[in-house]
Length: 421
Image (cartoon, rainbow, N blue to C red):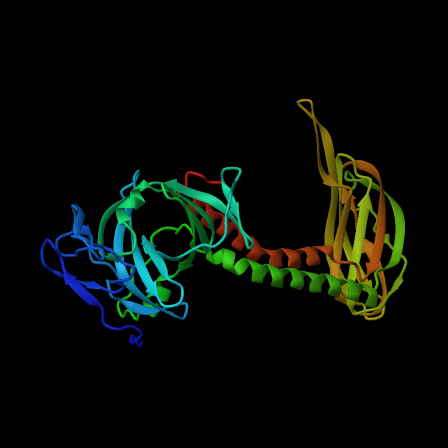
């Protein structure tokens, strides 16, 4: 990767340990941190060097170093300063890299637990709504965090007094993968916008050969993998479901449902006399196949059952289709609560029945002595709602899984916030 965008920096000696400290932007930078002796000082165009503080700890090795150059979002950047900070209430630190650019001034690159975001000054005015949300022309941001920070150490050069950051009240509003930050201090209010960057993007931008540490946990503005897939999957699923419904309607128009037979029969049962029950033989009906056939049955059972072995017989070929249906219905009152079980109707669906003349043989049997009325209906090309619903359910499974995954992801994200929805 070419890193020839900049000229060599000037330098000066640290007033405490005489270590050479590079100056990349002498016209803007006037605060410096020495990596060797941990001193932080002011060094302006005139006047003596003013030592501001000595940090108690040495800056640990960082993924990027002062002077690192690269291309972020297609634009040249150079790291001129690095600071380590933490919230007043918590011990977990994060890193902030000051990025010098050519076209748009300074930017910041922040890294916490392996999660990166690029921060730029925001233009315009923003107002917190109902104490929690901020809206701009593109999206609504939800309040995620509000804190004061402490500067642990710093190396390199800075164009502002880094120690003043500890006096800021910082509020962060998120709309992953974006963040809007408000900093309120003695000099007024400033707003910043940030966008999430993956470790792969950072490594590519700065030409790093060593792989950056994998992110830990869920980042504040880390995009949900399931959330990124959902719009496309939902778009495909809705159109596929619509296509299936349209095809169902098309086939219904092409091969409409038709009732071929509809007749009621009375039948006396007597289980005390084996072999006494007589079969029910329907009249014949013509069937135009190959197609599905629905045989719908109903019986006036009441706290009883009737079993119906059935034979569908092709009168031309003699081929028989055997199946059994049971109609049972029970009801009552238990502990003052009404209950019921079963139904007085049942149905059998036979697929790809060939054309021909058919009739049905029914061999009913039941328990005890009863008189039943059995109603038989034969339908050609029945509308198979169960198949339609099954296909729609199968189409909906993946979007539902993504919805659940996204909700779990968001719950983990907001578990780190004091302002969860």
